[in-house]
Every structure is written in structure tokens, then in C-alpha cells.
Amino acid sequence: MISVWKSQKKALDGGLLGKNSLVLSMPTSSGKTRTVELAIYEVLKDNPDKLCVYRRDCSENCQKRRYL
Image 1: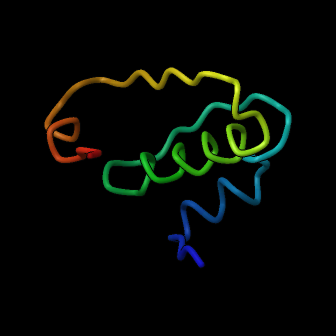
Image 2: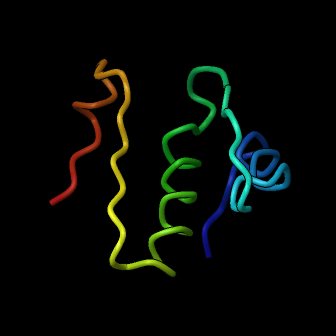
Image 3: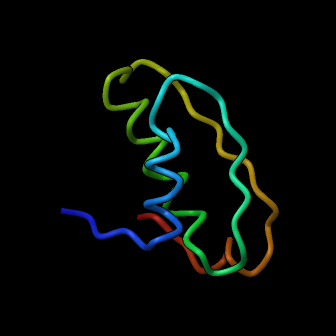
């Protein structure tokens, strides 16, 4: 089970995991990275042969998140 913040729930309820495109605009420290990770996971779990490129501004947040 994954817990989500109110801002993330609002994005999910707004159709983030649906088939339509949408723009995600949230304040600093509102959970944008985790929200996008959920959307990426949702697409790739049903399409394991697909490739996802996630591009973002490389500020200090890029240094905080490391995957081993």
C-alpha cells in the first residue's frame, strides 16, 4: 500500500493514471516526483517493452534521488 498526500490524491482523482494527457503543476514539496513515478509505473507495468524518458530540471532534487 502506498500512502499519498492530498495534492497527489487530487492528481490521481483528476485522471493522472488515465489515457488522457495532462499538465501537472504543483507547489514545491508537494510530491510531484512521486506523483510522476506513479504515472510512469502505471504505464510501464502493462507495457514492459516500452521505454520511458523522464526529463526534469536538474536542481538539488536530482542529487537527492539515487536508484541503485
